[in-house]
Image (cartoon, rainbow, N blue to C red; front, top):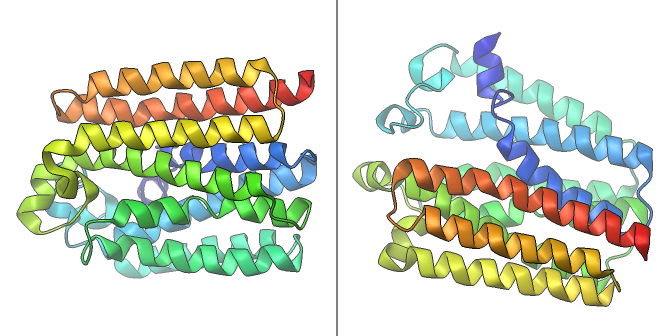
Length: 279
């Protein structure tokens, strides 16, 4: 059982949380955060992130043994068979389908596109140095899907939020890729951490600034209160702290910088809900 939990990363919820926060931002920004739909999206995020991890581990099963951080994953160490992983994926996708069928047809269309993107992502690192961009797109489909499910419209806020989220994801997943950079170079895996080279910290900083600009514009468009801008100031401080963590490109500190993004998600979410409550 432990091996299945590890395969789905249920023991490491950071990825689920980083996927969940922007989805919750979107749900609240629609102005109609229904409890039922919120619950469906939370369960959907948990299920699809688990499915994504299974696909990722299946795709990387021959690479993971050569990377320090991933060599003890269930498929890499032989704790589970490939067949077991595929059956796990089938069950997770069935659960996701059951959840999806409770939403409207517009949501179904977006979910199909999101699933395709999620399935493609694990293979992108073989062919391009921009798998983090694919992840950014894959992790952002929850935003238009929330708008589709709740108001069946895609206002400017929806697309600005997607763009800001993509910038943020590329930034934090590059921090994550910096942890594996040396191993990835040896086995031929590509990433933005390798592509950016000595400009990695600078480009991460630029992406973080672009994230802030996108969120600031969302605050203006939606006439959010001062609380939201205070939240953005805290986010800026968190980004500065991350820059400090990655300054020497040490593996452990780069991973800490990546994990720190959970606080970014929480702060923005709190900024949104309290701004809407006060406004």
